[in-house]
Length: 76
Image (cartoon, rainbow, N blue to C red; front, side, top):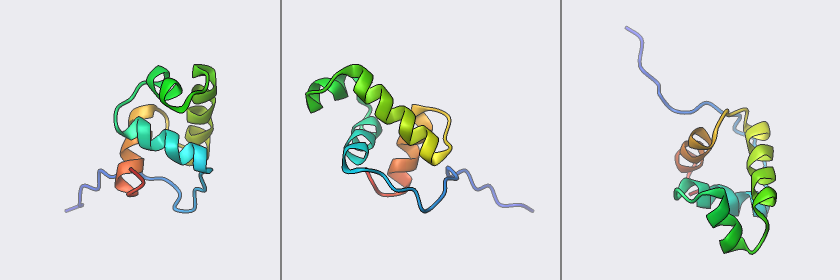
């Protein structure tokens, strides 16, 4: 019998910048890019760029996976 391992698989050595860490914490709390931009006093495209960069770094495909990865990695 195989064990069901439903955790998000991502490289363990992903290095996030302090800004990316803040963004991923807010994504994990369920905030939209617009809300994150307002809270961090930056433009929405800036937040979209950070999210896109983090998806590239982690190899994940969407914000939901990114949020789950952050929570499972105890970043959020």
